[in-house]
Image 1 (cartoon, one colour):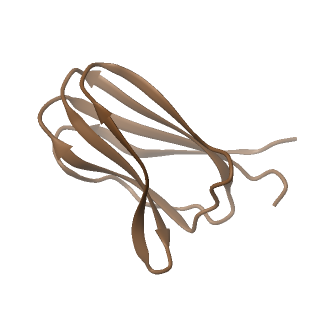
Image 2 (cartoon, rainbow, N blue to C red; image 1 turned 60 degrees about the horizontal axis):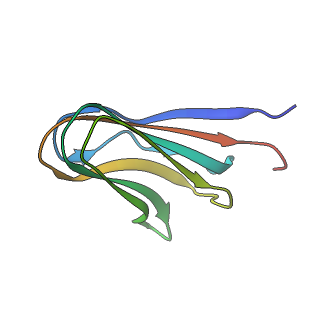
Length: 103
């Protein structure tokens, strides 16, 4: 049976800054959902802790309400977080789901 690891990396952000960081070293094969519930322009970065520093593994620009799915089938990271690196308006969230299968 496949076990899923579900995280909320960013919840209802209305400005620049980072969301909650999570230890994810026991999880891989990530699916990220960037969701905008109130329309507005922003850049949302998915970041991973690698080699003692945060690195952007995906950057998504949003300009309207709705959601984007990002697949990272091979990603296996020590920590993950979301960061609003540019903000004009809107309310933004990021959800992540990984698997612990085959570890």
